[in-house]
Image (cartoon, one colour):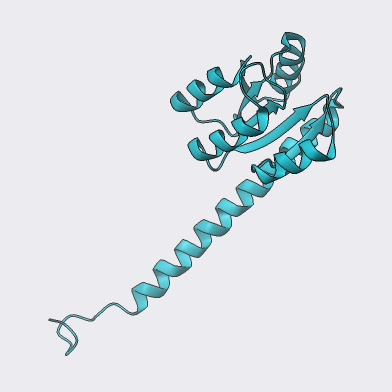
Length: 152
């Protein structure tokens, strides 16, 4: 597997629980307790997934979502919250959240959410590569033949 996950939550027990669950599933995990640390981490390393608490001590989780999207656009970003509300969910989606998981979370549901979004991202990569390959083969067919009247 080897996909990497960034966990951003100010609650140490949540970080430890999430880290344990994800490590047992084969993910590479790093944890941060605030948004500033998370932003520094994404400057140095690539992450496939970020699990972001909506209530961080230094910045709002939805604000961190948009910053992470700028730094690593292909990263799957999932909000985790113990304060579910329609307003929070709308803000999260508007800022580019790929998912929204409620605390206390069901480990199976969390893993399923992560896997689903990673699978979608990987399928999109495959589609993109296939389109690029198809496009390059198409352009090869229309290269100017040497010695033809079309060469300069």
